[in-house]
Image (cartoon, rainbow, N blue to C red):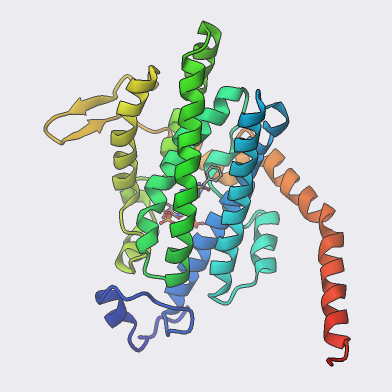
Length: 311
Ligand code: FAQ
């Protein structure tokens, strides 16, 4: 990777002017954007699976329509993000191949199972809540196509978060068994959700450069803290307990303190050894293989269109 100075790049960053696809940019900037945007796209696509699993079992027509719309939105986010990454000169085929051969990462969170209907509410509330906390600052990312894609993604994620919270409010007004189901789901998801923000700042390989380049606007730990501070009052209103005995308000810091994250579990999941990694990859590989005829039909159609005489 060469990192030769690029005309106008530093000046644009300093003036908070977006970098656009045809602007000169350092190779390392391009590379880190391709890495982050493609991993983000893969997360959206793999992220359809845990919730997609419940579409046939939604308890009412209304909940089914909401869940269908949400899962379709995630697919759309994946597509905008692949398109944003393509503006950096990488093809979608290359990115998808990297996901399917296991060389590209996707968010650790989607390697956990959805065991009950309450999980669907908790994913909306906590997983989408964490995603929004991370993604709102990405609307100000220095790279134009990524920043612009994030604006629409964040609007949709906000609907996702609200539908999850609304689902949980309905369950908490239900029977003791329903309330217990919500608490059990919160207990399982809380710690993996905190891991979504990535390693602590001192262990984050890319934080320094990504912050310098205005790709990330806040560090992993700062976003995690922001999320905890916003979520504790929501848990109180909902009437659930967050499974952390060390979680308490620290008046001096003006933030909630919270317990230690199990980084061994995080790295195991990232390395492919989480509860559902193999299942998720198998589902994506099968979907890709089952879709081969569509790609082939599109290719033949495109060839015919090119060959057709113009009038
Ligand atoms: N899982 O040096 P850092 C969603 C990797 S939301 C797996 O700190 P960076 C919405 C990291 O890639 C989820 N790997 O890295 C939705 C790096 O490995 P590498 C997706 C992780 O980039 C909701 C290494 O660890 N959101 O999909 C994770 O500065 C519901 C060292 O880490 C985004 O992708 C992790 N949790 O910061 C969909 C947001 N954390 O690449 C469906 C955009 C770290 O060197 C249903 N991405 N790693 O091999 C980001 O903001 C950043 O990339 C971070 C990581 C914050 C994720």
